[in-house]
Length: 320
Image (cartoon, rainbow, N blue to C red; front, top):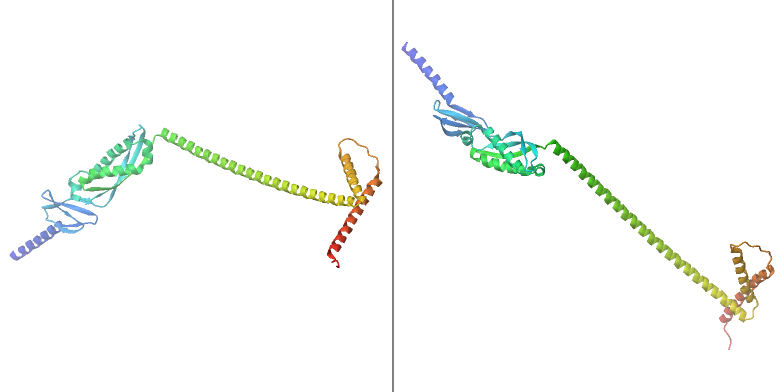
């Protein structure tokens, strides 16, 4: 009976020991760190893995998420430097680097970060004009991250990124900006149209200039050709006059008929081409005109014969 009672006591003791060991076993998941408090005071930090603590004396204080987290900054109205009311919101990315500081240096870490970012967002936006606010988001993000990261450093937190999501100006300012943008686009369109018209006028003027130059070159060439033709005609007239003069010197009466016939025919041409009304009775010594023409024919034949004789006489050697 005594043995049986001892056995039961031993079994109960073993079960109690197993329960105590189970109470002291702690498994920390990846991405988390646990703080251990002994009799209410922080003693150590448990990293991911299996750990044994002293039951009833040690206890788990806080379970801190060491992964990067994102926190939404609620929308709020802010007055800019030029007194424009805008609505701004954003997001904050942060990561806990020191679990004990994040657990014991600040109460409600996420709420503290959100409030800190909100107040600094008001400060940064309030120190800028509306145009800067809309065009320099990177500058706003950089300022916010620098200020918030410096303020949260004692809490063992690293601010990795701060982003302004939406900036909503008042409706009247949006309408004014739309009108301004439309006017600017119309201005650019007018400038482009004027530039195109200017280029068109320049090209047209250059084309007209080239046409005038080509026309001048053509007239110059035509004048040169006309002068050359007149020169050749004068040379031919001089040659004919020389030949006729030589015939007259040699006593050929047909040469005189040539000059008379030429003057006669030229006079008839001028009379026929005059604009006044005229009445011509033919013949006007037509036989004389025909005879003069025949004389010219005889004159040319005689000159051709003389030329051939001269050539044959110069080509035959004389005997001594």
